[in-house]
Image 1: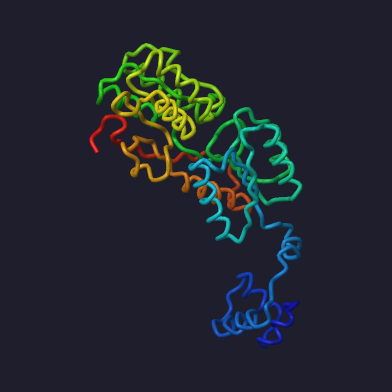
Image 2 (image 1 turned 180 degrees about the horizontal axis):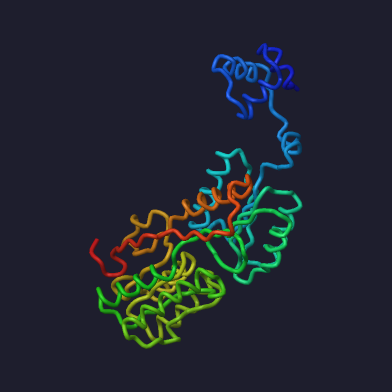
Length: 334
């Protein structure tokens, strides 16, 4: 296996110059850089990342713990994290907690044992936040992503309450709906709780009494939501339904299909998050679209600032603005 000395000898430079070229730690003349790069290719040299990391007391890795990476929003956040991490020369170690507090705690423990340089985590519904606090107490930077609150750490997410309020008021004021159901899911999840609050604020502003039988809670999984929504749609069909997440949206649409119903003919429909390429659906689905990729990238940038010590102020909370796109499913024209 080629060594850095082999590269230096072939390029006719010192080993320190080779190191500066490879690691970008000091400017090197273009002619010299070219010779070093050609020597690296010719010798097949690969730097010993582990040894380099140990010398710097770093592992050049970060941990990312998400509740369900198969969900479109979380997948986009993961891509945003990975883009920024790769640009900084860091490896992302991904763990999927599956909305299980025990799995989440175990993932945090394993990543801490691997001495990752920082952690990004979207806490599960009933997270053991003391596990997150323990990581912080060890001196490892932590940024909460998407699901905010609970610990004194940097946090990056999206505005939830105001967009949901605007979405519901649109159904009331633009389309005249008064019986609006909410497929909420698990309100122990901070984002879901905030979206439920937006729904309630809209009803209050519109002077509509809250009907608890129209608020569907539960695990938030599509199958569970579908079962619960089937009863609502069969027995006391609302004129409109709003879903608080992609999963609950799937449940609503599955329940409707099972009953031979479809939006917007049988009820108006809108959702928070939605699906990839929503504009290809017929009817087009009205959705609140959060900038998930940007959330991931912003969280990673914040974590990098903590890791390199350039950010020393107390924890920050950053909320990005989502965008509402009105389409046919809620009754708007194509």
